[in-house]
Amino acid sequence: MKPSFAMLALLFAIPAAAQDVSTSFTLGTPTSNCIPVQTQDGVSTNGQGAVCPNGFYGGSGTQITLPNDPANPNNPLTMYSCTVAVISNTVPTYSTTTPGPPGSLVQSVSCPVEYSYFSTVWTGTLTYNYVSVRERHCIGGRGAHCVTAYYPVWQSGGGTLSTPQPPPPPPQPIVTTATLTLQKAPCDPTLVCQIVPSDSSIVSGATFDVGNSSLTIKNADGSVSSSPLDSVQMNANGDDGNSYTITGDGILYDQAGNSNQTVEIQIVVTSNDGGPFAVTSGTLSITTTTPP
Image (cartoon, rainbow, N blue to C red; front, top):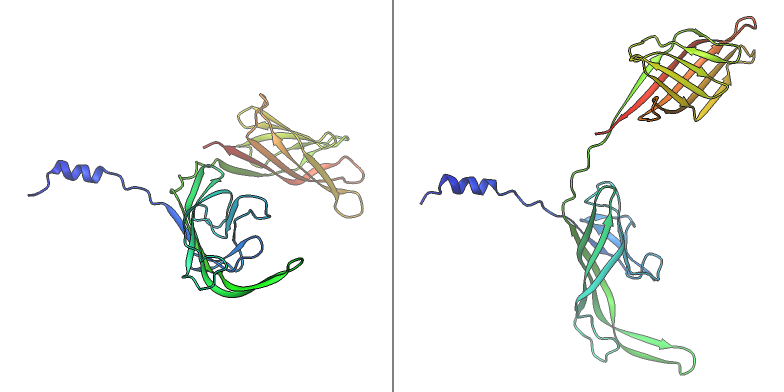
């Protein structure tokens, strides 16, 4: 029997389920506090990453760090608040007269993680493998004695973790920068300098009050923007005191006190024969951040 067009349409309308992102890792020999991660997804970690049942520094719950985060590529995955529960425990019995079969401690693990624009929970398992080894254990102090018996000894370990596919990142703001070349313009004796851009399609003119660290800009549409500059620096060009480079930067506000712009200005001022300084060259850069 041939499928109807309605059935075919229904099949194609069913969206494919998003696949989880996952990772697996192997563990090396435990240290006093943590178990180092040897490989992640088949690649050596070069000593990065660890599973720490009592926290990275002790006195805490299980914490895990891996060198690569599949949900946030090119960044490590660090989980500070993991909870674990025993799924099965077949670890060989402690201090027996005969060897026991190899066994494992298998735990479920759940780790919430907060990312910059979403939160998720990584879930999976941790597996610790042990073998039964004949060893001599001694106890010192009063009543000191030694016992030779079979004890569980670490053999290997590993883990798997997965989480739902993260959502796409939110739209980013659009950042544009307009840099204008400045023409020659006068300064008054208090070093309030007129700013004349060579292209007046964005800015028709400006006033740079060096002493008061302020910049007032007249935009091409007739509006006025101003900036109480965060910093102004003045550096001599040579030793004769006739030329200086002055720079300033800050947030640019419109007449209503709102801002989505920053400004940077650099001018070269010179004085001929001890006369007033004048702008001889420079640049004015305005960076605008537009919300998505």
